[in-house]
Image (spheres, rainbow, N blue to C red):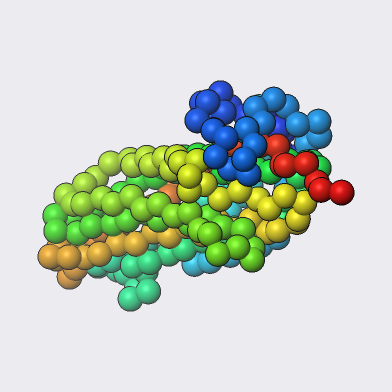
Length: 220
């Protein structure tokens, strides 16, 4: 995926108000960092985001970035291949942060459409982690049939579990999403159940919101 994204350092009030002094023994920094961060897209790959089907852009207010999908769909039943029950997409970002600051993904908004026959179920899962760190934050949202409607899910990170970027180090930030469908007791010979991370116009923007805090002073 081409492109460099620029995201400013303003923390949305919703997320700034949730931050406490638990991390790094420093209060979170809820004013504007002096410089923009620069996000370079390292890789975007997976069965749910083939080449040319995912695009990334910065939000107008510079507090978030979005990933737009046009071919992210998992399905089971009539017309499906055995591997179609699960699709995933991994996004790897190289993030250049202003000196003296650390960032985290405070909230993510997902939405799409699902058609699930009675007896079928589906799930949407996302994991977030920095390269070289064992700490991973993950969330799963489940849906059961019969269901035929748009869906929307929001992951809000608790300060105690949020994954912060290491101070003073350049690490890739990885976001791995997954869609999965289970046929259950539905009739797979005559019906199809699916979940898609898309909308009526054929694509959807998944929004990632930033939170910021000040790193502790460097010991001399």
